[in-house]
Image (tube, rainbow, N blue to C red; front, side, top):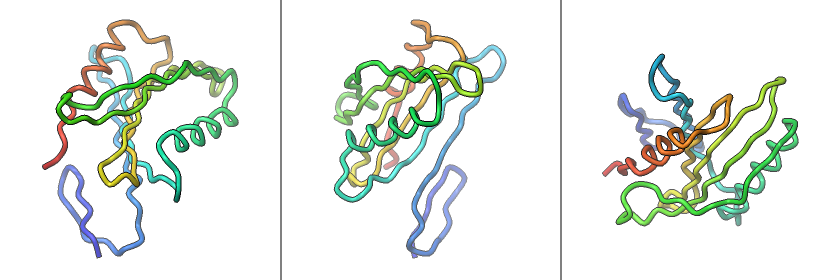
Length: 145
């Protein structure tokens, strides 16, 4: 048995369940324009973060049309003292006839078997203000103690 914690509390669950948590924060009228998705992912055996990202992006590219990605960039999560370094992905693709624009930041979780991913999505290209909002979200991260 293990304890699974979430914002509102915790539960005891049998071993063998993997955390595939997704938190979706949708914009309210007049607020931040993008939808923010926070997800947990598990690495496959002998897979590193780069291998995971390549695998996930290849799968996405097969499912959508007009897929484009910019070169990956380094990005940090939280205060610089935390030293949580990850990858920033900038993607664009067409899904159900409409373009989707993503800024996605992927970070290793301390156990090195899991990743924490932050994805901001918009139906239009990101403006400088959107990019700053996403950077502010990442910088605001504080690990649960």
